[in-house]
Length: 134
Ligand code: THU
Image (cartoon, rainbow, N blue to C red):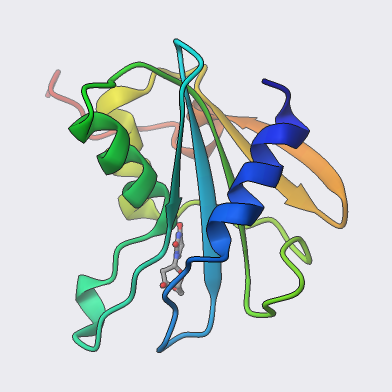
């Protein structure tokens, strides 16, 4: 699975984003170690804090189907329905914390800006993790 393909799957998943309150639509595509891909979109709620991000939707779908080993996640998001890569859409802190439960330092976060793909290692985005070692 190449990076572009995973971004394309995230872009497609974004079509289902339920972003009624913010208008910011996000899509994610999570690649498992065995090659399976789980998609996610953000799902907002009138009680705003109940909103679920695209990344967590994808991770929860995967884990609920018995998958716990992940290689990479592609994330795209923007307020314009037709554009998706005006800027990198970095995962929020809550999503990084959820990723930290299942992903190691080499897990790749694949983002896209103006047609250019950039791959971040999980440890670059979250160098200090709240861990069970404490
Ligand atoms: N959002 C995501 O889906 N992923 C993130 O990592 C950051 C934010 C969503 C949540 C909300 O529906 C919208 O983007 C605006 O914050």
